[in-house]
Amino acid sequence: MSCQPKKIIIAIDGYSACGKSTFAREIAARLGYIFIDTGAMYRAVTLYGLRHGALHDGQVDEAALVALLPEVQISFAFNPERGASDVILNGENVERQIRSLEVSEYVSRVSQIAAVREKLVDMQQRMGEQKGVVMDGRDIGTVVFPKAELKIFMTADPAVRAQRRYAELQAKGQPSSLEEIAANLRERDAADEHRAISPLRKAPDARVLDNSHMSVAQQMEWVMGLIDELCR
Ligand code: DC
Image (cartoon, protein in one colour):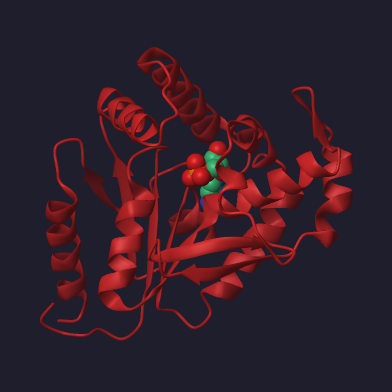
């Protein structure tokens, strides 16, 4: 990068399995910014609900979960091995547990609850007060930071996304069928786009990044060009 802009907020929104977190982490590393994965925060609340009986047998007891919310404290701690921050729930590192299939199955419904969103959006806004953050999620450019200096909306061909997630799970030794993965992505896209509160939308001033046929290096070149423009 040829110039160092004043600290800004970079908001990255988009569909599931588009590589948002990988991209956001890489940008944060290049700029020396803090990377905040807001999906991990919704997952941490979901884990807490599972552990305390508000979510079970496929049911979400909304009143019980909302009653638990004051007990939920979420923070992040940098993990040098991953080059990213792990999520800390009430003092416990739960980065691995929040990625379980069980959490993935409930999290879309948990993220539709107004009181959950209110609490997490408020935390996210406080995390961004000093700027110098790259935050990824579904409503960052529209609700959390509508005035973010740079907004990116990520998308990719659903078949490419399914294939990437398939390869990722294979590499982790958790094979799953390509058709199952594609169906799960379709469901999550629909849930994110059609929910009543803060649905997934491109902010009018967001730049679209379709990375179906782009490497991470090409995506970085594109975004660094935009960041360079911002400091002219
Ligand atoms: O990015 P992810 O798949 O880890 O997100 C988990 C869930 O949280 C996903 O179903 C959408 C929801 N989410 C949200 O509603 N708003 C955000 N800012 C981030 C995630």
